[in-house]
Image 1 (tube, rainbow, N blue to C red):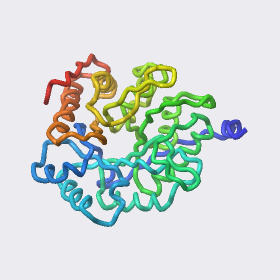
Image 2: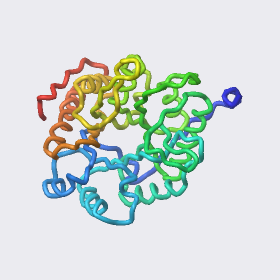
Image 3: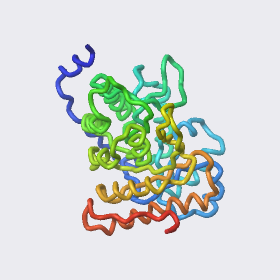
Image 4: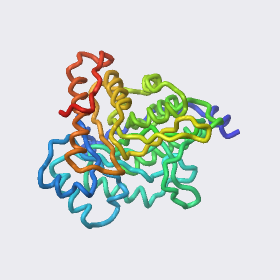
Amino acid sequence: MADKAAHSMSTPQAHSFQFSGAAARALPRRSGVGLKSAHFQEIVETRPDVGFFEVHAENFMVAGGPFHHYLTHIREHYPLSVHGVALSIGAEAPLDLAHLDALALLLERYQPQSFSEHLAWSTHDGVFLNDLLPLPYTQTTLQRVCDHIDQTQTHLKRHMLLENPATYVEFSASTMTEAMFITEIVRRTGCGLLLDVNNVHVSSVNHHRDARTYIQSLPLERVEEIHVAGFMEQQDGNGDTLLIDAHGSPVAQVVWDLYAYTLSLTGPVATLLERDNDVPPWPALLAEAQLADVQLQIARTSTTPSSSHAVIDPGVTA
């Protein structure tokens, strides 16, 4: 019905969002770290050698306070990525204009090198569900997500990145693969791709697909940032392995291996270490982030993408 009608629409033309100034600058092709309040003071005092910091937008949607005090100081010395978690790009309802306005104010204040959001939905009937929920990959949802991304980029006057999800269920109604869905979004809207390698591994295990084949199917030339993180392993009701994108443990070797493979295809890309639960002391977090710098250096010295890549040993520090 609605899907058939969507198929009959003329093919949308790809958009190209070009904005000048600080908002258009790219993140450095180095490792970055998610900025946590427990580390504010130490970072300000020691100015560690890290490529960039990333913050969750919603933590800073207030007028003042200690978060803004520290981020203002840190932003003076480091590139910044702002990562949204509550815009609900995939929701059936229209985007929340008040939330978009708050995002616009935050981005204007800090002029980050990157802004990103998730391919997910988290709102329904005015209720925020505090989760990143999956979508059926149909023509109807494709059009809705593209419309929401177009609206977001226009409202914010900047190019945005879209992150691939970690999922635990898939929809029988889907008419295309996730990689096909993301590729078409990028083509239609001109947005970039935030490739979360941990999410690729989690979803691939949960849905019994090959992670490397999935990565090969994405528009890798549009990858502008990569995330790596830790996952948690459980069992589902049938006793099968179920991985959870928990961000509460060090990056697993299998994810480092997949990251190395990804860089062999893309070349060096700004890479964020995510850690949102059981956050370790700053020196331990920085040392783990530097493992990504080791692999980024290998990617820089490779003559071409797709060359052979080394495997990271988590016991080695940069």
